[in-house]
Length: 110
Image 1 (cartoon, rainbow, N blue to C red):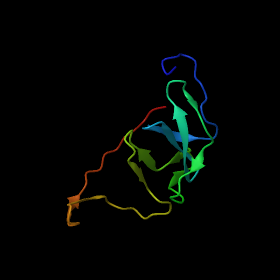
Image 2 (cartoon, one colour):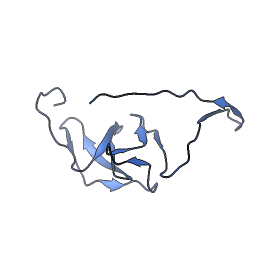
Image 3 (tube, one colour):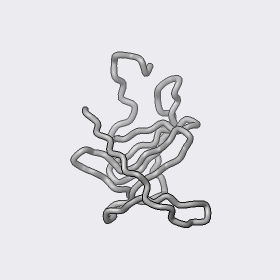
Image 4 (cartoon, helix red, strand yellow):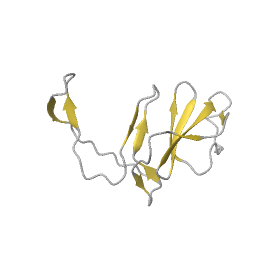
């Protein structure tokens, strides 16, 4: 159970896990993004993990974190490795750049 005071290991050698409906865990193993079927009621995987066919993603080895996020609805955003510094832009439906997107910094304490 998610409310249990006892931790339960679900996947070995994984970081940045995100739950994605319907019933997937998306996570990283180094520079690889992986997905595995997940039974949220039983709190366990139901198959072997598979690599997502997107190639490598940016990875911060000192923190064992890959540069990606996934929404519960299935939207996946990632940064490829070895990219120069970039600025995200707002773009309209015709592809015209409207201006820079704001930058938010999140500091997590572990």
